[in-house]
Each structure stands twice: as structure tokens, then as C-alpha cells.
Amino acid sequence: MRLPLMNLFKLNRMPILRQLHLEEMLMRTSSENWCIINDGTINPTIVMGISGKPQELLETESVLRDEIPVIRRMSGGGTVIVDQDTIFVTFICNKDTIPGLKPDPQRIIQWTGHLYETVFNGIGNFSVCENDYLLGERKFGGNALSITSKRWLQHTSFLWDYKKSNMSYLKLPQKAPNYRQGRSHLDFICRMKDYISRSGFIDETIRAAGSHFQLTPLHQKDGFLNQQYEHLRSRLLTIDELEEAAVYTPAVATRV
Amino acid sequence: MALRIWASSTVKSTSVSPAFSLSRCFSSVLEGLKYAKSHEWVKHDGPVASIGITDHAQDHLGEVVFVELPEVGKSVTQGESFGAVESVKATSDVNSPISGEVVEVNTKLSETPGLINISPYQNGWMIKVKPSNAAELEELLNPTAYTKFCEEEDAAH
Image 1 (cartoon, rainbow over the protein chains, first blue to last red):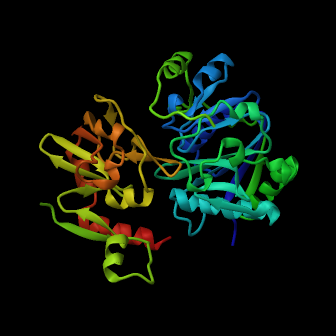
Image 2 (image 1 turned 30 degrees about the vertical axis):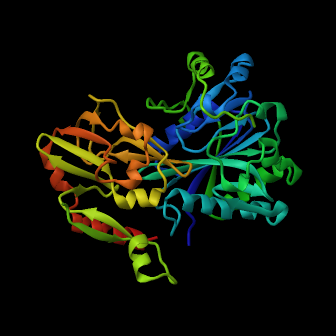
Image 3 (image 1 turned 180 degrees about the vertical axis):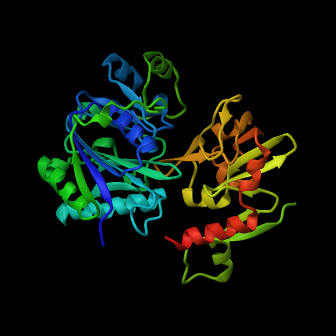
């Protein structure tokens, strides 16, 4: 049986906001399937989900002091801080692309879990737990989705490495998965580099995707990058919004 | 009181009691409403139509934690997105079953988005629209047709 077609787009250090805008444009205007792999982003950036509130999720005074950009993305899910040591992988598919896959959030995450299980191939005891990717008992990838009537998008930011100082910008969220068990952020996450090389992860992800799709590699210079899309929802929060959040004191605020 | 009829779900239980299976495996579909294949309902009541997502939709989404709604005065178009709901790390578009102008939004959903799960056809309504094309209602599914559509869609996966 012929595999469904998918465009493979490898990026290197594309700024994360530009990547999110590219994803929104492809999600809304393209009828093709896409796999986007961005090997790092330029500057440390905080990325919240669509409903993220900086006063609840961030140490806003530190964020403002250190001028860390904060993005609210169009997909659901939690808050991450990304930088050049983050590897981003995104799948954008038509709803009927994958035979037998019902396009609801948990089934999509399960499907991606099977894909990444083959990437790790027994290394590090990979699993999907409460919609997070774990190695052992620690999270190494945060994923989020956006679903329309005809398509779905699932994107992941993988912690190939991270700086402890960056994690101090994030608060312990009020809603955390049960498996977290109240652990601090640094006790809850792990570095992918302790298990697999950077190029090895990217190569194995492409190989795993290639077992599900007929991949067509595309290049950064290809014309579709110049297309415009007006209704972008992912955006940078303004300094005014962050200053307002810094003044607000929620009932519960716990440092991670 | 509206009569409820039952639509099937993909949930398959092999070791539960019939009463449990009934409450866990069936979504409700109300008489008197019209339905879109993208799982929104519309209730036309005089000059205004109320719109929300169906029990089948909220059941498949899981706990709704955030709702994005349009502003009053905005135009909506049949089959196109007017907002979104967030659940299980996902935002899901909500499409308007009819075209028209938004005349009211359910502001309670900003504080209590879970109303969509608890009461999808009553307290969980999302927007009210002044329809611009009454003929569009005829294109939508009646309760029986929507029930059958849900069964066929679930069986396909």
C-alpha cells in the first residue's frame, strides 16, 4: 500500500515565533501534510499555550528584568522555555491521512508516542504518560495540538539540553500531571542528550516518519515561505502585558 | 422538556454492567436542534439562533479548560471557525453552523469553561447569532441524521 505523502522541512535555528507563524500558515492554507524539524532557536524564549496567563505561570519580574520574550501560541498545552538546545518537531496532517486514526487529542498523542518509541528503540525507557513524553520518570518533551475541521497539528519541543537558570523563569503550574508528584521543575525534567545524540535523534525521527509517510524534502529557499497569512494567533506578549502581570498577585504562586 | 435520543460512541466496554455502559458509551442528541457534521448544534428561536458544541463533541474533547469566543458584532460564516476550545493540550476550532452576526456571547465560559462539558446544550451555549440566511438551517442535520452520522464516524475509526 502506498504511503501518504508528506513534505519534510528541516530548519536550523529559525526563531520560534517565525516557526509558529509558518506552522499556522501551513495548517490553515495548505492541503498537504508536513513534518517540520527546527534544530534549535536563536534566543531563550518562553512559549505559553493559548490560555496561558503570565501572572500564574511566570516569574514576571525576572522575565522583564532579563528581557525574555514571551509568546502565546495558538495551540493548547503548557509553558516551555526554549533556546538553541531545544529541538522542535511538528506534524501537520489532513484528518484522513493516517488510516484508522481518529483525530482527537489523545489518539494523536498516542500515535506520535508510537513513532517516538521507535526513535528511542529501547533507550532510556521511553513512554507517554498523561500526554507527556518521558524517559524513565522524567519529562523531556512538551507537546501541544491544534485541531480544525479538516486538519490537525501536533508540535513538540524536545529538551536536548537546557540551562538551569532558564527554568527559574517558570513557576510551578497550578495544574500539573499526577506523575509530577509535586517535584520541582529540575527534578521533573531530563536532558535528551544523556540518552541520544542530537543528529541521531533528528535522523531517527526522520527515519521513523519515513515508515509512515513518503517524505519529500523541501528547502528553506522554496517559495512557500514567502506566503502571507493574515489571521495569525501566535503572538509576542507586550511589555505592558507583562508589567500588568507582574503587579497582579495570584492567590497561589509557587516557584519551581 | 426536550426529548433526548442517544447517539453511539466508539467506547467499547467488555466487562462493565449494562447501566454503566449506557451512561458511559452514549452521547445525547436533543430534538428541536439542528446539527453540523463538525459537531456544533444550533437552536433557532425567533430572530436569534443559539450555537454550541454537541454532547458527542465535548465527550471526545475531554475537560474543556479554556474557550475563545468572538466579539459581539463580528460576522460568522457557515462552516468557518468562530472560536476555539482548549482541552488535553489541544485547541479545537469551533465552526459556525450558520452565517450571521454575533449578538451575544456566553461570558460565563471565561470563568467556567467546564459548562460546555456539564451542560453542552443549555448553560454551555457559546454564541447567539442573528442569522443572515434562513435557508442554511435546512442544510443541517436533524437529530436522527446527526445520530447516524456520529455512529458512522465513530465506526470508521
